[in-house]
Image (tube, rainbow, N blue to C red; front, side, top):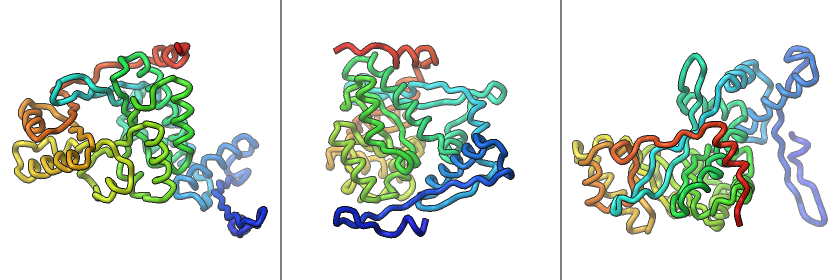
Length: 314
């Protein structure tokens, strides 16, 4: 790493490089070459997950997490339809993935997403979710949008712009129909690379959505530094809407902020008529929650495959 970190002169320009390294020892970590390489690869992904430009040794827990992931079966759910609050018209869906374990039942994302991130499998999982959801969305009316969540780890381990461009080209989905939801974990990185990535996605026509707004730091500087087109108010605020004056003040202020900045505001977890009425009075743009619609479409593996393999029509 020290040797690679030194500057190099190439055609009169100084080039600076860095390296992430994964290490597996033999025969301690596995005698066959294939096992050693697999273990080293898992350690490499851990090094990237920990911020890159570092090294990690293989640990058995890395492989245990991988095996746990392989015992799970994928099931993509088109979840929680989104509606325009003023018109009541369906505006789009959010794609969420669920894992179904044959003995443990449904595994929540809070359990398997960290496993995927820790083992470096989030890149493959995230790409599968994006491609499957985009392919399926092409069967919807053209004015229906698709929202897909991205993990902060994906910004560290892969070229998100290239991935999105490739998936859109393969599936034929209009970039203007795609929304990418980001948590504060991505925005907190606040690096020039992240800013450039989000700006390029915005220039492609993809909408950047700030998810869970109101939790964590939720710095207002995010709204000026990043090309955010939509803010989603965290459901924890909607839960106490109408019973807490403080919550009502916060939510109405966020809606007003969105109107001032010409940013779409979506409220998550709307489950009562009273909550919907208050949000409509303040001018909230969109809502999602059980009051308007429960998860409506399960995409089976066969349906997903047919959607992906369906020939595009010019």
